[in-house]
Amino acid sequence: MPARSDFCFCEETVRTLGDGEVLVKVLYISLDPAMRGWMNDAKSYIAPVAVGEVMRAGGAGRVVASRNDKFASGDHVVGMFGVQEFAIAHGNQMHRVDPSVAPLATYLGALGMPGMTAYFGLLDVGKPMPGNTVVVSAAAGAVGSVVGQIAKINGCRAIGIAGGPAKCAHVTGELGFDACVDYKSEDVRTALRRHCPDGIDVYFDNVGGAILEDALACLAMRARVVICGAISQYNTATVKGPSNYLSLLVHRASMTGMVVFDYAARYGEAARDLAAWVASGAVKSREDVVAGLDNFPEALAMLFTGENTGKLVLKVADA
Amino acid sequence: MPARSDFCFCEETVRTLGDGEVLVKVLYISLDPAMRGWMNDAKSYIAPVAVGEVMRAGGAGRVVASRNDKFASGDHVVGMFGVQEFAIAHGNQMHRVDPSVAPLATYLGALGMPGMTAYFGLLDVGKPMPGNTVVVSAAAGAVGSVVGQIAKINGCRAIGIAGGPAKCAHVTGELGFDACVDYKSEDVRTALRRHCPDGIDVYFDNVGGAILEDALACLAMRARVVICGAISQYNTATVKGPSNYLSLLVHRASMTGMVVFDYAARYGEAARDLAAWVASGAVKSREDVVAGLDNFPEALAMLFTGENTGKLVLKVADA
Image (cartoon, rainbow over all chains, first blue to last red; front, side, top):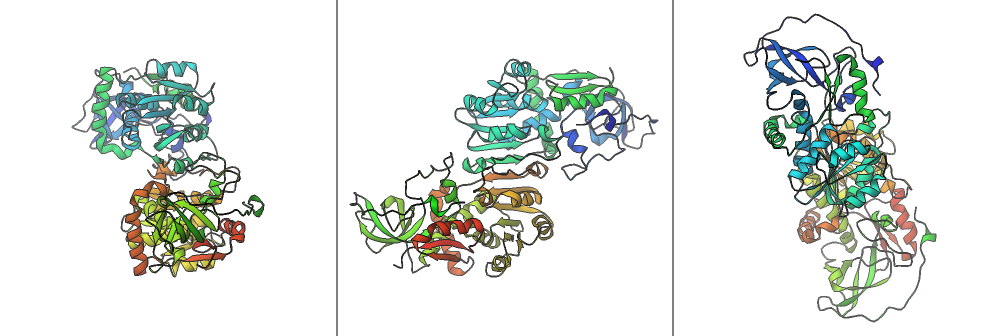
């Protein structure tokens, strides 16, 4: 579990901008389960953050200086700005967003990487068909909440898995899922069998561990399992693999990993759809805001203890 | 591990044939790892064999009596005849084969279900492309040996995994694989890294357990893992799931289960191709023959101790 002692807060002078670079005042920092993986010194889909480097993080902010023709002071932008108050990045590493369309923090949630992850993970990898039963874990989280709502838009039944009555009520209430399993108070496998009498057609997994096994035990024939994350396993020394993976054979099912970065060329397509859905209310976005850069270590830990509902962001400055 | 004490040998009188039925004298019985799964009282892709039933098995034999217009005495046929000397089955549950084209036992191997499993599992699920590196476990076995040879026919590199120098020599020699890892004397992961410097594009898994983990650790981007079987886990009370299944995420890879019965409508297509390849020598078939119905329990156990090379069959009668 990442702790305060794993980080140090340092001050340094903002350097002079190079050609094409932009200075961004960071207003919101995105807190994502994937960040825990970036802290492991192991081969993964992205290089680890080295000891001494600025912790990698997505963020949203306001341009305060620019040597790039495409950005002017006052523009609002989103990019991988790291856990810091000011970030310098090349203009081609950020994109402009419009805070009059949606709150800035939403561009880190439903209109940002979590929304994109849900969009491509569900539609491209999960390939849901109308009438399918789609189950998603961490259903009250940034990605899971959008997965279920996109499933509903596509004519599927959406069943969430989340921890605690408040999250489950949010998932079935505001987010409009058909049901939500409370893994803290119910036997997940029994509950999935009840809610999915014909089996699970698409399981979108954000958590791994025992809940992945429970879902594998309830697959429909030719089910698609999307491996998006495994938050239950990120702080364990030895990952628990699904002992019932042969359910894939029994059900002629597939389990496929996805990383949203692969879809960069199609972000525009997802952004248009997601913006329209957010505007129409078909996708509701919720951000869970923690204030103060100093609180970063504890805010990051909240992801792993399940304390957030919706997209967890750290508010660094007001404007 | 199935033992002699799990079976009893009984005699009963052959009953009168019903309309459409055929009496077959069984000459060869197929021994397949899947049979172990059929003995578990658990939901799977096929109903379990109940205590007291004739043990289910594929077989090849000769028609000795027929009340079906499509079959005459003397015809050679293949079907699910069970572990018995004579079988009665409806004509639509068997098909005629020609022992002048290939030895009868080959219709239980490369020209039978194992060949079909290799054909559809590799080509339809694994989707190998020319230049791909295809790795298959149990490479000296009935399915694995055909997988690698079809991979070669399709312009791929074929790397086998097998136990012991004799099997590995058979795999790289007679079967023409590019390399074979001896899991009994080499560290599989290290050897796979050496033989697959650009990673594994298609991994065809027949064994599960530690070797599946080793293969998952060596995937190329967008790799396809075909889950055909898990012979290392069939006699364990608790199956070991792959603890590094998140390699699927890192490599945007998929792991898909397959059962050959799903391809029944396309058996003809596979049979034509396989027969042509066997005739041309592009696919070499080898049967490992144990004689005597009485030896069934020990012959079945040979699969799990890895004693067979090629398709293991039990020879019940000469003709």
